Image (tube, rainbow, N blue to C red; front, side, top):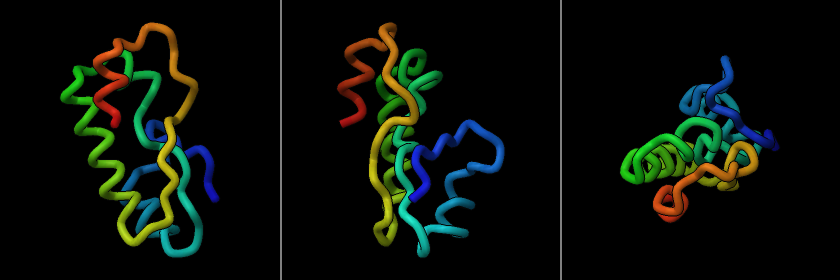
Length: 84
């Protein structure tokens, strides 16, 4: 298992990780970027990021949804609710 997938780091592109390793290991994390998107995106942007990542990583299984880092205190409640 790769835990935690941090898509903002070089070499951790969503589709490449899933295509290259998705049949061999479980990808954990990467559900939403808690340092950039969650505190600073709009609820629609947060929802779209979560949806895209679930669709890519969840294809054919092998994905454990979780956030990249701890959730910081400046995250609007609307953005938290957009992750469900």
